[in-house]
Structures are given as structure tokens and as C-alpha cells.
Length: 102
Image 1 (tube, rainbow, N blue to C red):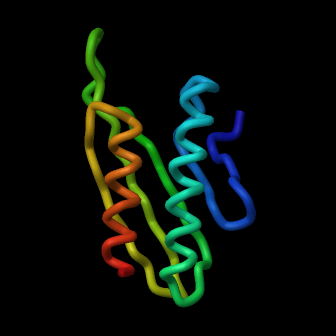
Image 2 (spheres, rainbow, N blue to C red):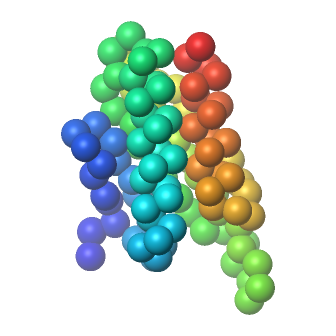
């Protein structure tokens, strides 16, 4: 199975293969809302790439490492967050990029 998921034409997710369907719906909504905000703030929104890596997995606890990269008119904006809650990690990573743009 391919590890990359396309959302629309210019949003790509990697590493989210093992996430359950309900969580993916929430993640797509979060990412889509941030992508819309980024496209409003950016000069020329080219691509948003979000990568997830599970790190420090133990039986009862795991952390998620999220890398987000926005290409705006050829200029990259990147952020990285490590967090126990996947939704908070994605939110914080994308919020950092929005703050850089505004």
C-alpha cells in the first residue's frame, strides 16, 4: 500500500497509513482548514506536505513526530513537533507555519 495520501491537488500526507478512519477524517479536516488559511496568507501556495513518524512507542504510550513543509512561491516554510496527542501535534506544526506566514 502506498504511504502517501493526496488531499486535493497540492496537499500530501505521508506516514498516516496506520491511522484509523475516524481519526483520518478529523486530521483531514484540521489540515484542510490550515491549508485554506495558508493559501490566503501566502503569495503563491504551491504545496503542503505533512509527514508523521511514530516515535518512542511503548505498550501504553507513544509520541508522534510531525513534520510540515509549505512551499510558498518557491520558498519553504518548515516546522517539526513531537507530541503524545496526534491531533495536537498536527495542529501545532501547522500553526507554526501559519504564524511564520502572518
